[in-house]
Length: 251
Image 1 (cartoon, rainbow, N blue to C red):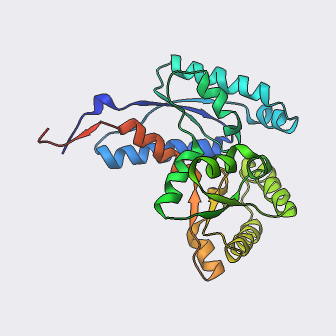
Image 2 (image 1 turned 45 degrees about the vertical axis):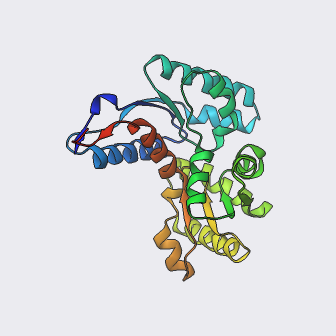
């Protein structure tokens, strides 16, 4: 097998929300390129890190127009720097994805669309969504899955949504991974599965740092598939970057 590494596309990442999960994105992307191209190959990535404290404060103040402006400026900067696609390395900030896409001439790889393809591969119609309160409660994410892909989305109770949101912002985004929180969320997942969820969306890029398929299955004693949006999104970006790159020796 020969490879045409000269056509490997450059990925622009809007990161820092949080930096821990952004680091997972770049690790996954580089590992995938190495697996597919071999040798010394690595992904071509341009990353702009934001100060997440500023972003989180604007989210709490419901200042989404300001957030859209920040994301748009960064996307345009990445495009000017040579990025050939944009990845917003967080689920919640896809609330402004349409504004970002309309401001640039390169594709924005939407995390919900990449996720939907994986759900459809497993022929699932009903899944549960875990994430920040904004992601779970507002239409931009679960509505896109329903309207564009025909996927029904369940969400936890009001109390559970508040708990998960608190764990994400007060713990995971600050690099804290408490085993007790893992046990509680795994039990919550089990309840959602018993109520009809065929799979569980880890719809916050920090959640896969806490919740794993192996530990979930061991705790519950039965299997319910997890959809790790960090890995799914990073993989979709690499699929785009590698499109038309690999070619056989016969070609």
